[in-house]
Image (cartoon, rainbow, N blue to C red; front, side, top):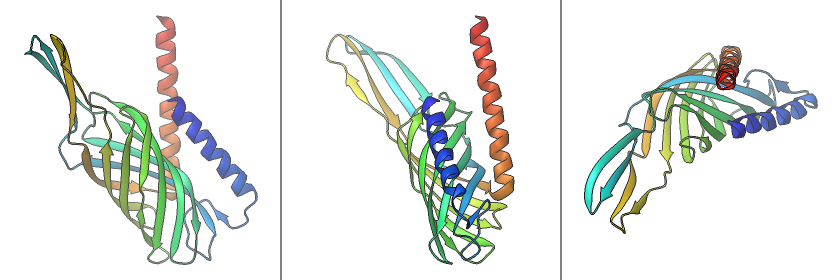
Length: 227
């Protein structure tokens, strides 16, 4: 959570510094020459198309298998929030970066995780575009991994999103003595399909999500403080 807050703070600070001195900045995505740079405020929901990734741990005693524990690492549905900045190189192409936060509520490791994405956009016309977003996941649990997406957008209000994740998970084999354990992860690669919105609807959705997370965090602090 600290990494998430720090990343968002740095990104918002850079956005503030940039927009303060840029006369061609737009708060919603537009191609050049309508603007030179614009804010990214995406919010979407995706459904997993591939098998659920599991962490499988086996416990041994005297070379005899005594138990198996399986924990799902991703749920069937993810909520994805992206906030960032993009620059129009010309009327057809734009590049940028965004911070991505993902909410997973349907797995044994439910919670928030995220990282940063590079963004490459091809404007098809003034109303629609295609975007490619490779990125690195580095905070949350399980944290490490790669992500990527291909989106088609219409008027920034509605988009179709195909997302991919590759989880980097540490495995071990500790069975040298009379007892020990092994752990490995199944189904590292995941594919998701869903919809997203941007511009003002995305900004409002991100704001509502941020408020909800802040309220939930304060409730948890109050609950632990009461104990």
